[in-house]
Image (cartoon, rainbow, N blue to C red; front, side, top):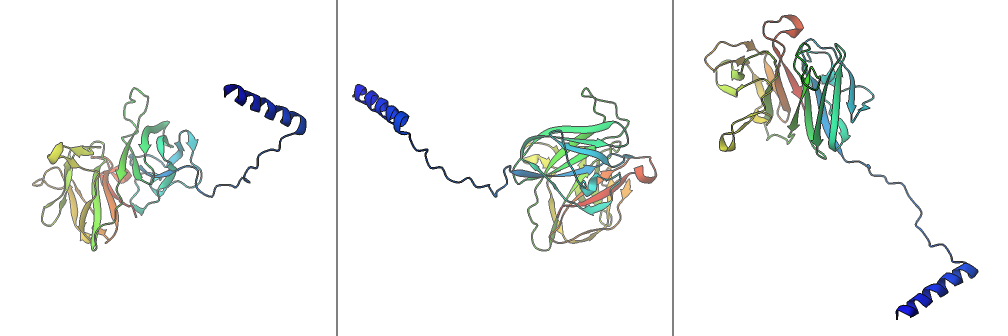
Length: 260
C-alpha cells in the first residue's frame, strides 16, 4: 500500500511538470471593517499642586496626538465632565510628562477590554526622587460606571492632598459621616468582611449637599466645600487636592469629576 501511494505521488508530480497544474482558486481578499485591536478607556487627571498642563502623554512610548483630556490641564482643575481616552487593551505602559519640571509619571498595568480606569498623577514637584528617578507617581484606579438607580447618583472620595493628614468627608449640617477617613493615596483598608474599598462609588440621593473635610467627626473642618450638587444618573469622583498651609492655587481644596 505504501508503494502504491509513492507511485501515485510521482505520477501526479510528472503530470504537473509536463502538462501544468492549475493554481487553486482563492477567495478575493476583502478588508476587515472591525477594529483590529480591542480597546480600554483611561482618564488622566493632573493632581500635582503647582504643576502646569501635561506636555506629553504616551502609551507604550507612542505619543497621544490631538487635544488631551480636560483634567490633564494645569493644576488645579475645578470641575468638569471628562472624556476618556481609548487605548489598546492589554498590558500597557502610560507615561505622563509635566511641563513645569523634568518630571513624569510612569506606570505599567493591565487594562481590560471595554473597562474604564482613572490615572491620577500625584505627589509634589519637590518630592525626592525614588529609585526609578521619578518625582511624581501615578495612581491607577478602576472605574465601575454602572448606572445608579432612579433618583440616585454614585459618588466616591479620594485623598490626593500630599501633606494633609488622614481625613474624611462629613455632612456640614448633621456631621454625619459621608466618606470615612483615609490617608493620602489610600485606596482600601481592612480585609475580608471589614474591608473598605475607597475606589468604589457609593450610591446617594440626588440633590445639593453641604460637605466639609475633617480629621475626625468631632473635629473642626479643615476644608469646607462649596455646595455640591449630585444629579440623578450621574457618577462623580470628589478628590482632595492641594497643600495644607498654602494659599492661592496650591491651597488645600477639592475638585469634582463627572464621569458620565
